[in-house]
Image (cartoon, rainbow, N blue to C red; front, side, top):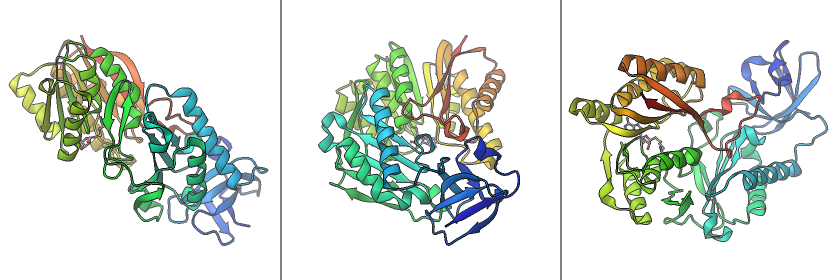
Length: 400
Ligand code: SAH
């Protein structure tokens, strides 16, 4: 029997049902636990705490499967967890066929991400894309894939386990077909009436930023007649939503030429007037300053940058970067204009993000009102005991 015993006092977070066991809290590991094996976690006094997946190479040394001593970690558990995750999305996600089906810890499948694309084409032609980001779910890969196929009716499963976090788990980066056919290079999804190409093989993450669905809708609903600037546009998520919403014009900036090509393809795919859209292959920091020097103004600006703080060590530098784009962004807004601003850095919480943006308004010498706090959609739920799951946070501001 594999057993992991914590140092005295280190059981507290587990008693609060936080699902991670850090290497620093461990007193000893007994048995011959291979990567991904199930291990029983005990407090220093020998009390049962949890059953977890062992990750010998990671600082997060184990991730909890269950806090119930009587719940076996077996195929049936995997099936149940996948079935519950899929049922949750059926109930909560509508008007889109790009859905986060499994969101790791929140679905009690730690380290697993699964996105589902293209149900509108019929389940047979849809595409599942998985990331196995921890040793436990890596070990149960076959069972997970079978359960996903059974629950969704979608036979096509592609693996995008090429995120850097895999290396911290001691796992190789791998991509490829796990079941069914090669992904359709013309695969597209429809979200709130807008069609988007999804490049499952080469796109970011699993191909599409599913997490911004509700926020793209909100931008679309508020775009009518406005001059829009979308910074860090990737394949044009917010830009297309704004075009559909009747924006007068949309300027979009990204430093990835490949993403911009897909974005232009999206305009054609929807039959929108390409004359309303301008795509700039450029650095956002430079472009914002240039626009300010030229006295350009906009009615609605979106700032959705990449993760500036990949971990807690990067918080200070990231805070300066967030502040800079928000500061100049606010100066480019006409009075009454709207700013949608986001951070997807897990290490920066909502309170800190709020403070950074407020500081940017002060230094920009503008009055700004916060109209809304924003987050990922309901297919990215958060475990109450696991605040780390809340990585995407945003604010909708209005320049007074
Ligand atoms: N808003 C998008 C997702 C943005 S992802 C959506 O809803 O789909 C972040 C994007 O920022 C990536 O496409 C990346 O190419 C781009 N990027 C990163 N650094 C940049 C920089 N300094 N200037 C311009 N684009 C940048």
